[in-house]
Image 1 (cartoon, rainbow over the protein chains, first blue to last red):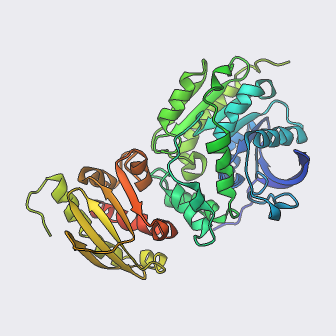
Image 2 (cartoon, rainbow over the protein chains, first blue to last red):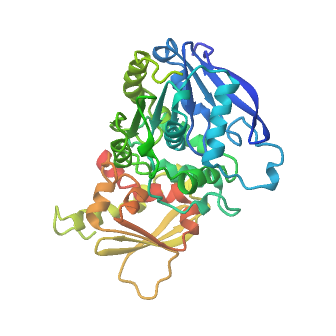
Length: 288
Length: 136
């Protein structure tokens, strides 16, 4: 095999969020419209590596993926050893806005998956003028829990193995083997209690069912795409959510599951490229 | 083997389920992954109850009930047609994972869940092993 170097570049940015100093890792590739990608709970920005090496995307978009604090190559903040990690709606929102401001991004597109798909709805509700467009993958205003998250963080159960085993069923059955297991490897690598802490936002703090009616897609276009095999955020959850938001576009991705960008990158690009193409031609709505 | 009515979902499901020991014990990688599990559990396939004994990842005994006063740690129960859909080589969405079925109320997981959760991918793969029958 001939050696080659990918165009992805990784760096760190220092940010203050809710009064705490953070050193956040991010990767990027491409030029053009900023496209900030938000990883799923318990994972990190590597999930978007295929988008960053796809010239069809990077010729027009500056694709940026950061690891949330406590995830991937972003350390927890000082003092982490004395607290239980819990992601809240407010902390997640402030982190995204601080990151975009820190890089001085001009009205980026935000694309988030799972918890990232939920938080884009919150951005659409409260900060639509800051973004060119919002894309929610596996996104809904709420979904029914299907297991007890206490199993994710115990001294007598291997956290990495149980996290991966739980989410393994969320991957489409025809996902390429290498992509399936790369996706699961990230879940095996998460810090203790981090997946569980992310799900605090997802299950407890981030119920948006009584707020999505406020989304105005004339200010910021909203696209929702959900995999057919996702039984956590089901296609029905996404379609129900989109049905309450005039102008929201919803797509069910056949054969895909909860991690479309990493579990089957080739299949996912068939769905996401038309959206990105459409957004390139969409005038910037609601510009101040 | 209890096949006496070819095509009947209960009989087909039982026939497939009873091949699990050979499918598991012929898979060295699966045995390696389950090497820390030694336990007994129940699987209910519609009208048939099975007691499974796993020793160091090997499925050393599969017995069909009824059984008198037999201990077990956890039990997984679903009707035969749902097991058959779960065992399709490419299952339909919603029938492709134990938790997809349980979320719909089509499968129950009961008892002491510690050995189940501590060896979750292994147990999932053991119970999905009959998919290999139609893949072959």
